[in-house]
Amino acid sequence: MAKTTVRKRPVRKSTASKSSFWTKFTLISLIFFSLLFAVYHYKDALLYYFSFKSNHLVQQNKIDGARIHQVLKRHEDLVLGFDVSEYQGKIDWAAIDSMDHYKLHFVFVRATAGSDRVDSKFKSNWEEAKEKSLIRGAYHYYRPNENSIEQAKNFIQTVKLRKGDLPPVLDIEKLPESQSLDSLKLGLQRWLNYVEKHYKVKPIIYSGEKYYQDFLEDEFDGYTFWIANYNPWKETMDDDWNFWQFTEKGVIDGIPEKVDLNLYNGTPKMLRYLTVN
Image (cartoon, rainbow, N blue to C red; front, top):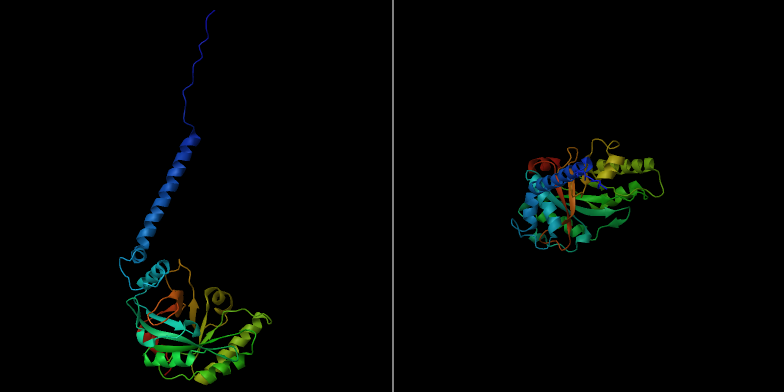
């Protein structure tokens, strides 16, 4: 009896296998080129991280330092400053000069909070900043659930502005617990008006970016804004910001604790035009 021969069919690669290969190849290529772009884009920060360019900030966390270096590198034409309060402890003002090799030009000093609080280090910080020839500004931490006029009076009784000082600053960060947003905005405006009438200069408003966008941008048009944004992916200042607080992790010689760093969106000459005459 004859045997039946069974022919084996040749093995063919499926279309699905080929498609899977090209999908993986494309994905790996995208990842590779994305990493290559990131390395090129952040080359200065990476060099800083590995200490090839600077070893000045030996106390600075390298990741924080790399981000700070990247921001400053992109804004070499702008003006660098910082802000302090009692939380920075006892400051050696004589040692303050620069952040790495970037000259420090201005400082905001916390003066008051609410209707009855005076920062314990305000007087010494305020006087020392003047002695150091830094352009100085004083700010008030606003408490939404306290009377706005009493808060304004607390600031006025504490802060004596002189020629060359920056306008007074209203720091608003919290939402109210026992009042409406409309009531909050009314209180903020009352503080601003009362303080402006006393000092004969329009105050600056400080807040976080989200707070600014949601509650302040449209309602307080015409004011100078100082905005906080620490997002590690944000590298440039928005055009409608006058000041940008871009980190809370700066390290400056003479200041025992980490400190907020700020950029002014202009030149040193433009900053002086903003000061009280």
